[in-house]
Length: 285
Image (cartoon, rainbow, N blue to C red; front, side):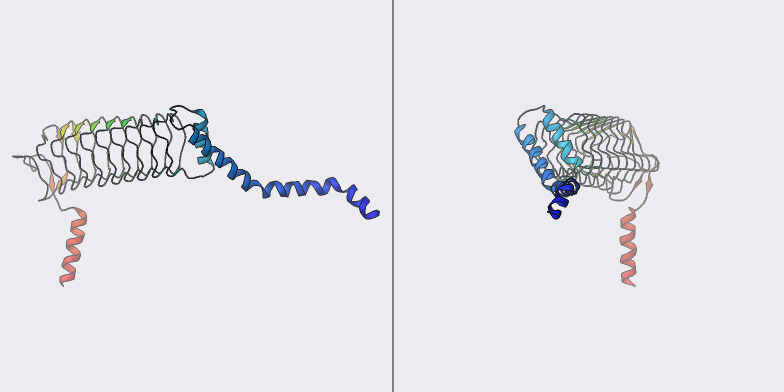
């Protein structure tokens, strides 16, 4: 009887730590259920342009560090959403509205962002490697120190955007409109930027070697101190282009009758070629 009495007298003190233990043991199950329900909300909103429930579900999942890789939410309005550091790689985001969204350091590797609205969107440090942004609208978009290797921007409108210190190696910008934008010190090498209108754009200090500007129209463009080794300017008028201290080599293709020395360009091998040539000479010794 004394044993039973002791149990009953201490029932409350025993129950509290036991309940606490069960609560912590079930945290994982509750989170998994919460995430499953969030994805159900997103799926149920498919085909609906504006859904607050989907908006909140996406933010909640990202805040819990849940990957959004491969998500299918085309033509959704996610204006002003905060998905900083989100993984949206291989996602179908065609026609999406990311107006004034915060997407800094997010991943969009091989994602479909065709016809998207990225106006006033913050994508600083984002990874858009091989993403498709064709026919997208970028107005006052921030893309500093972003990674756009192999990105497709054909037919897009880039207006008042900041691409400074961004990597766009092997990207394509065919038939694109670029206006009043900053590409200072960007890595813009081996880019196809043909049949494009470029107005009041700053490429000073940028690496443009091997890039193809054929048939593009350049007006009030700053290419001072840019690396132009191997770049192609066929059928391009460089009259209204600032070229002071830009570097070029024998592989740079200028318009007919263009005199680089008169425009204060400097003939110089591309740094990488100098290293390759030096190593080759050492091998011969």
